[in-house]
Length: 243
Length: 325
Image (tube, rainbow over all chains, first blue to last red; front, top):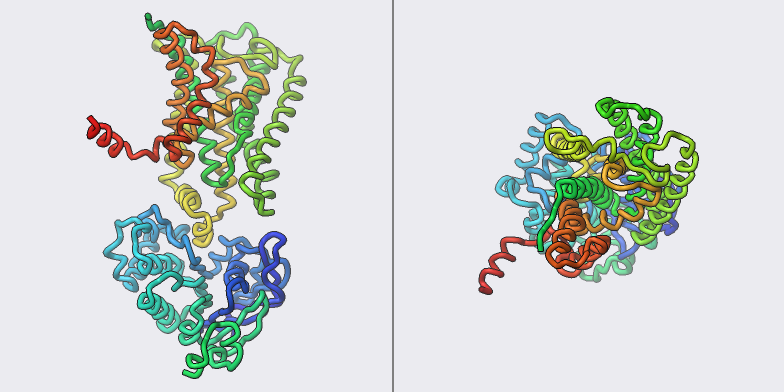
């Protein structure tokens, strides 16, 4: 059963249409990776699902209900979390305040429990509790962003290029964490990545977007090893594909 | 070279500064939440002023003793708050939000607020015409003030000063408590800092924006009412005073509500007290040019400290000055 399904979604910003008849499924408790060249509408897809970009037509079915056209705060309440690529923490607030803010709308004692939960996942944040989020390193900041999203105990988490601008080693750590979210917490993941190879390696399903249209939908491995698509769109060289 | 400040002059200066604080806080608030510099903010104050005027014209009898003012003034200021809040909300809902949804630029939105200002000016003028037949408080509907009613002394200061400080401090404390002690206030601060992220965390940013326009309009309405204690009011008064309001916000840095309070006092007292003191010292009548003071503040702040008073690192500045000696 698919936890999220897009049906012929046309979306964009104002009059600028970016997505054309985009349809795909995001299976439950799996990692689905959206890849594609720059400007192909990967981020816009996430924003359309979350109600930030305008959806002109089509359906976005989550848990059996059409959520297309709902405002973002209503979508957040339905159990979808979205980790934006940039500005994904409150830079001027401390780590503690960030986590507290993330529990907005929950009772005080529940927030405390949930903060404790995510701190167990990210012990490094415990040492930074009173530090302003803006002073964290790139990796720590990304962990805080994920922690913030986790406070709401989402069923589906969407990541927009979570490894962009991170050192390779830290990027791998973040992808590790995302795998853990699937394996240990049973969270459905929708991942947009510019680092196609690494992302498809941890992914179960791959979707290739080109020019706002779905060009490929299938197994992540299949997309990674596709003889033409990888070379044409993802910058994978022959040797890498063969691996 | 005798500095001759009468208590009345000082009282009037404080009254003026109080109105600027109320207006600058509102202007900064809507700038922080919706990122629109609202040039119609002064006219929102006039909407409040005319609401107060209407209540006063209905309820103040000519023979009414001044001690019987509490009820009409209380009602009048409540009406001023509500009218200003309503006008502010309408400005956001009917003009700014639709434009923002269509991807209008900050410049486009700013010019739209100038349009709103013109519309409010027209509506206020029509309203002043309709009211013309009513009992004028002091003067005509296009030139009135309430000063005469609030001039009596209570514990050494005039009643108007007490009312004005009461309203200003009450409003600021209420705003402070809202922002720091309530869940909605925390959501407001979150969406001020990062609206996209606040939205992701389940904050209804649109509601936050609406509330900020309601509060800004309401505060402006109260300020408009307070203005009638110190100066003559006509429908265009707000459009003129808005320059001083912008100066106060800019001196405060436009990003800080506390800055707006400080800026309101700095600009308000400079325009009134400082010009008077300088006039007395130099013997040149500088008070005539007091309207230029806010403009000077805007230019100097933007040139020297674009982040405003709150953005200056005072400690570093002082140590630098000291090391020069």
